[in-house]
Length: 68
Image (spheres, one colour):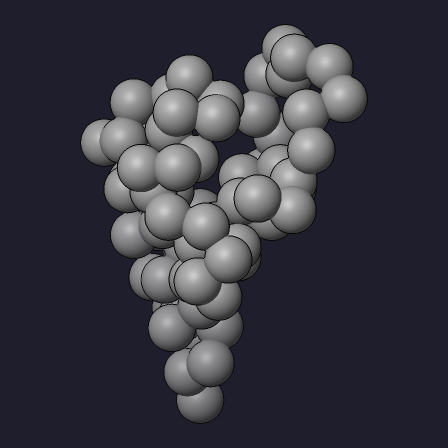
């Protein structure tokens, strides 16, 4: 994984989640690897990936939905 753990994260910010989701989508790591590396349940990471894909799809729409 290219994300290094310099210190244990106290909380996963949107920026950190996005970086991890990007690595998963690019095939640089897997959900299983990330789960083990960061001690996060795979189901939680899967939710992040699903939400990231939804957000990406919405961002590329001709008329993006107002998502809050």
